[in-house]
Amino acid sequence: MGRIPLILVVSLVAWGAVGSTSAQGTDPYSELDPVDTSTMILRRSLGPGGAPALLEFFDDRDVPRVRELLESQLDHASPLMRTTAASRLVRRGAPALEILERLQTVDERSALIVDMLASDVLDRDLARTLLEQSDQVDVSDFARVVILLVGQPDDLATQLAAIMADENLAPVGRGLAASGLTELGDARLEAWLAGLDDLSEAARDRVIFDVIASLDALDLGAALREFDRLLQDRPSNDALRASVTIGLLSCSGPDGIASWSRLAREARPGDLVAVGFLLITADQPCDQAFLDRFTSTDRMQLAIRSLLAASPSDRPRTALPLLELGHPATLRWLGGIDPDTLDPEIIERFVAIAAERPTNPRLQAAVEMTASLMERDPDRFSALLEQSGEDPVTMEILLRGLITTPEAGVGTIARPIMNDSNRSLRAIALVAVATRGEPTEADWRRLVKLAAGGGGLPSDLRPLAAWYHLASENAIQRQLPVITSP
Figure 1: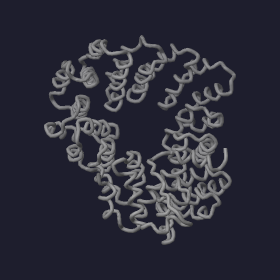
Figure 2 (figure 1 turned 45 degrees about the horizontal axis):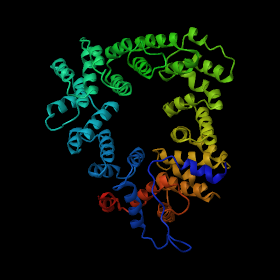
Figure 3 (figure 1 turned 180 degrees about the vertical axis):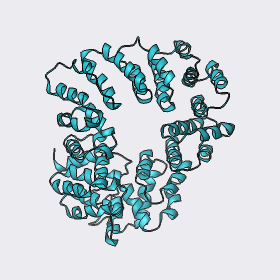
Figure 4 (figure 1 turned 180 degrees about the horizontal axis):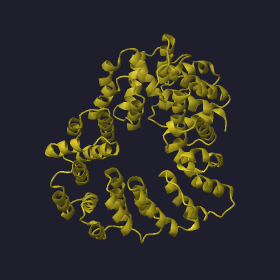
């Protein structure tokens, strides 16, 4: 694959894209008003047709005045934009009750409650405040049960029983209420499951999965144990059984190992890798009896057996042969590990594989890893960037890592690449300098042209270039109403 196609593949790491601007003449961007141009680019990506992923991208990078941007999106036409902005504001410490009251629908408020649970924002004090203000904050039955289970009011059992008994309510909310009652010693899950018989098999499994998925976050180990018992008749490769085992491994170690052991005993030869990876993702050791079932001399099977046999702390390094072989499950697992815990050697090898076989998840993980490498070992990062001069995909990953790191000033490392023969790399290097380095006035003038579509900047980075240009002009507050107006 040649240079240009590879760069185009990398640019598909989509955080929100905008179209390019076309004009006539040798320099089609020379007549554009810089502030108006940046405003136009941002309106396309954050206005009525905006992408929630771009809000997350901006928030993750803590762009200038991002809180004002998020607050403006609470009135966006798109429910998804509103809920994304609300979630990010609450994570930044905004008063949850005020944000909930500003959301327009039950679904939006309920989605925020579930997100607050997942991000550990919803604690007991906040949940009790929400219960006291329940007449002001209308949410779904499921979200209300979440609030009840976190808030633990004195009449918790009575309220859960009333919800579970009301057949007019959605089955997923009633299932979570039954799970809460089970946690209190009142086993209701079997009766709730029997009440799902009127649903199609697919719909029934979806409802059960939605309930199970919340139990780990709510630390409902008794309910997970009951699900483990009730679902044992399903096959060993069943997704619901696996989800219960994962939850138990997370919140109730011995029970999780017991659940996993039952799956392992029943697993067919073709399911051994999937069952083994449950232990890998849960950072649990593997017993010798299970390892002995890997009898193949195939190179991949031997590498997987070695990965399982290693202690959890040694597994990332033991995974290197599987990285070389491009094993998908290993790549996904490593991509989900906190990059700050990975050795530089592993990061470098992961980046090499991502460049050789680029896919969006692999590239995104590689960018996060290189950002971590930059923060921990700038000299090694710089050496890797210098060594990658003939590989545009690796260079782009590293430049995006510079843009991703929160460290100020590190973008100056990218300045030499502003003279590279590859126009896309020159453009990305300029964005790195502008956002994380020490840009000159000439850099700012070039940045707005990149945002407008000149210079080969990948489309997903144009809004970032436009935002930093407006910040350099102290124009964000003035232009934000234009950017976000309906």
